[in-house]
Amino acid sequence: MSGPSDLAVETHGLTKVFSGRPAVDGIELSVPVGSTYGFLGPNGSGKTTTIRMLLGLLSPTAGSWRLLGREMPGAAMSTLPEVGALVEGPAFYPWMTGRENLERFDSMGPGRPSRSRRARIDDALARVGLTAAAGKKYKAYSLGMRQRLGLASALLVPRRLLVLDEPTNGMDPQGTREIRNLVRELATGGTTVFLSSHLLSEVEQVCSHVGVMHRGKLLAQQSLSDLLASAAPRLRAEVDQPEEAAQVLSGLGLDDVLVAGRQVSGGLAGVPPELCCRALVEAGIGVRMLVPEQVSLEDAFVALTGEGFDVAG
Ligand SMILES: Nc1ncnc2c1ncn2[C@@H]1O[C@H](COP(=O)(O)OP(=O)(O)O)[C@@H](O)[C@H]1O
Ligand SMILES: [Mg+2]
Image 1 (cartoon, rainbow, N blue to C red):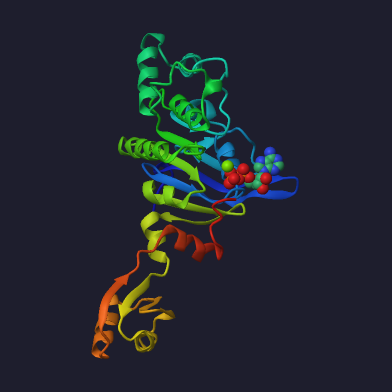
Image 2: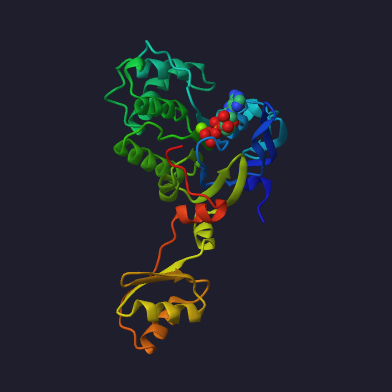
């Protein structure tokens, strides 16, 4: 059991209705302190709407939420300074350079002595890999560079919680890797990171916990390892008598047994792979290879939603 103070984000029945249609439908988020939580879902599933509500940028139609254990929006003034955020379209001036924008941003924040401003900004720029482009005007920035600057503005002061809406949006693979490393580094430093993504692989690589959004509903919420364990693993084998092997495996209780060339595969359905191996060999079948397949987050997502993951969406 976790108490309220163990949760960095907690929602109850959080709902947003736009013109009669729920964009976010009664979600119950529990984001453990210290976790890196991937808020995963295809485009249009309600991630940004949720994040805007969490940050007090949009009023919920119904429901309640807590950030860092404090009831929102009542505690916004005391809580939000401890929460760094990256949401769509942060207010940067196009004619200012990246550094000038950060200077302006920093000067507006509470408790930021101007004496240490330069060091704070240098550090934030370096962390997001924007040092070399700091003197360029914002309007000349690519989408990826704008994302980096948004992230830098969230990192000017230490935060207990970071809420990032699709932080790698518009970034090339190199930028994506850098953000991934940055998120890991922040998490190691004890910051709870709540990040939304429509990219399964991104969440799979960096997150300790996952919430799966689908059409405004939170379908599942677990540690990544529990979620992967809950998806049915499959066994794949390469054998000299595939049809016979399929019969043996079906007989053992594997489901959805398929043959493709010399390969045979099936859902393990709780049957230990060792048992499959022994049964095949005892049936006189030559086994060249036998592997319990790694279940991917995509498999888990498809199992949960009954739909493929719409990457292009
Ligand atoms: N301001 C708005 N007015 C009306 N509908 C909106 C508004 N913002 C979002 N929506 C709708 O809410 C749904 C969820 O959108 P969004 O939260 O942006 O999803 P995601 O971030 O997962 O892509 C979509 O159907 C979207 O069209
Ligand atoms: Mg979005």
